[in-house]
Length: 144
Length: 144
Image (cartoon, each protein chain N blue to C red):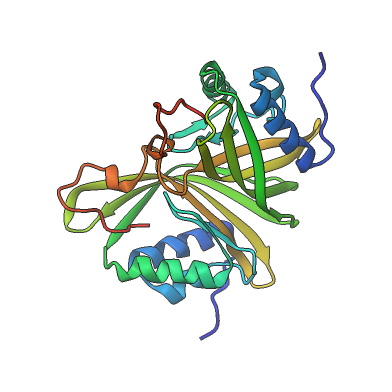
């Protein structure tokens, strides 16, 4: 079976969600780039990098047996010539609270504008749920 | 005061985290593109779109008074000519569990490859914490 070819990002995205709904691991993996640095961050989970770890995560999800239906809403498309995506882990330390350190998975997207490079998106998520669930003695302030 | 000009995405990112550590709202907002569709998703929070909502969120965070220090690790840079970023909200319904619907903030990044457009990143996060906190009668399976 040859891999499908997607003419647009929207075609690839449609195929991704169709495979997700059908719990079709091969079809889902065929929507990803053949690259060692692909990145997948499931909600409330840590970052996964590379085809092996990404595939294994979907195998487990599909193994759960839940039949899901997706509705995608409020889409925003960034379609510019100069776009850079950074995937980073933030380790955040809070002054005066030695034990309070949070780890956040972050996607930062930058665009080249007439006034130089600027941030277009900052998307952060907690690998283990909310900061409020961190082991701290005092109620967690809003850090981020 | 004229806005700073960042020659690289890394310069803009450095300035963003410097402003974050210094709780300097003006300096932080100066790292963002001047565009109505900028996107900011704080960990465990819903998506914010546009300068007014993004600015207000940072004003509140800085108003909390926490002094934070960031260490960025495990950086991955996507630097290709053809990159498309989609920000979407997923509304996920589970078959057989009428009341169980999850809302997930998603960033999907696509790249143009020799074999057409493919997914490079899928980053999902829960606006209100983990799916486990959803109001359901049965333990939540791993949906995603």
